[in-house]
Length: 178
Ligand SMILES: CC(C)(COP(=O)(O)OP(=O)(O)OC[C@H]1O[C@@H](n2cnc3c(N)ncnc32)[C@H](O)[C@@H]1OP(=O)(O)O)[C@@H](O)C(=O)NCCC(=O)NCCS
View 1 (cartoon, helix red, strand yellow):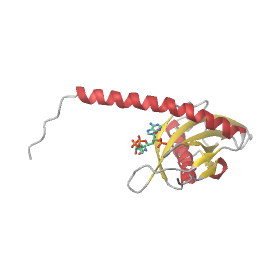
View 2 (tube, protein in one colour):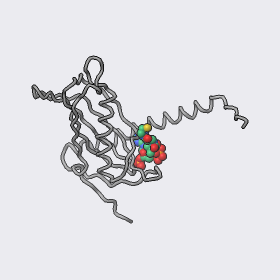
View 3 (tube, helix red, strand yellow):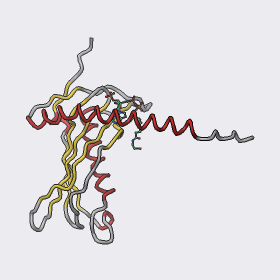
View 4 (spheres, helix red, strand yellow):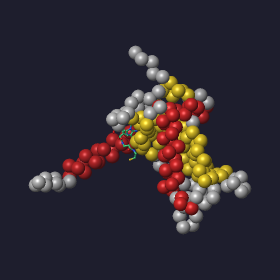
């Protein structure tokens, strides 16, 4: 049997810094939630790609809460790391904080768990290296990731079941004559 390669959490850790500019904000000069979600997705995708050395796609994002406003001119810092690797998928955790450069205040604004799947050129999932947790935080996140995955996959099953039921109820479309 081929031994599955293993990588440390620290090998795929990502830190990303962004300045909040006018295009990122609403009429009140607050960062748009969707823009923060985009930054979180990018930071997480880079961590997943570093771990797997593959292109990775977002399979799911767990809930996101925005704990307070981020203003124009403030700096957003994102910290992303792989919490656990499964077969072709990985859970990535991202923490976003905002820093006010004038006062030096740093505040937590949002955290999220995302699942990425490593894919090949045909879009098929490919196995990823195992993950070795090192610190006590790595170990806590590693343990939690298994429980969160179970809940996520239960939810996915439910969504797919509802989709099948919906399609069964939908009236069949007539084939167009051409
Ligand atoms: C994500 C994707 C590759 C999964 O492929 P699939 O053939 O549908 O699913 P599979 O059942 O083969 O699962 C592949 C892996 O993804 C995981 N997975 C699939 N859907 C998931 C979900 N909603 N949440 C968490 N994990 C999920 C599975 O558990 C499996 O992980 P494992 O190999 O580590 O056990 C596929 O659905 C896809 O390409 N989705 C679109 C991705 C995308 O374009 N994202 C950007 C936003 S549009």
